[in-house]
Image (tube, rainbow, N blue to C red; front, side):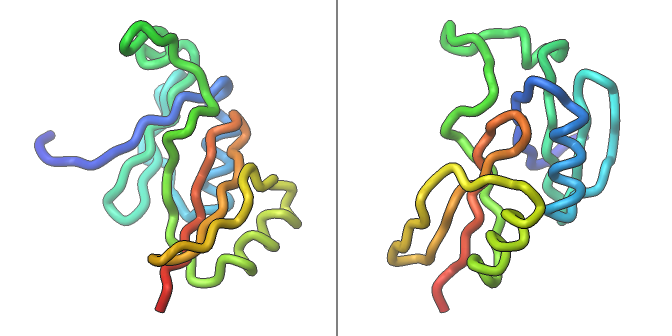
Length: 124
């Protein structure tokens, strides 16, 4: 395996994270190894890593891994208000205020482990 692009998400429980990204954001399940599940969308892999995974055990810069940090997956959406309304109706909570910037608007929602997912609607 040569070139690949992936993001690892640290979660407290793998299965709720897998179900969240499959249900709401169009990922497909590529591999399920128990402590880690690999999801895929448009050639991008999302590695859902629980406490039993190597990533869940090994500290980086002496900081123990834990879910709910500020690093986040960014998912482009065409209608931010509608996407947020649909997620809210499904019980997914926003974890930031809406931000309107020069490139577009975004808001973060929380996955089941508390990791933020940024929904970004580009201007134009």
